[in-house]
Length: 113
Image (tube, rainbow, N blue to C red; front, side, top):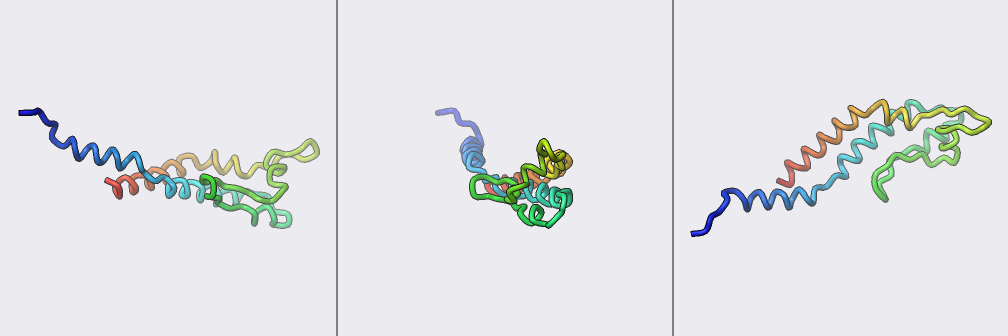
């Protein structure tokens, strides 16, 4: 008679499912929060910078501002003071972002297990 661990097969299936866990919904939830807050913080002159903000999910998920002068506004130049909008949106929403990601990950775990 061989010894057997009860529930081992089920546990193995669940661990295999978790190894394939999809995190894109969590990443999109986090990026959406950062985009929304950065849009409220971005300085507006012509509106070009604000309109260029988006969530890009082509090569990973990230918040991008496509206007050519976005980096100069965020970090400043030797002639212009920085007017950060993206970094404060990230720093100011850490708890909210973690909660949003956690909720999405929990939903995904429930889906796959």
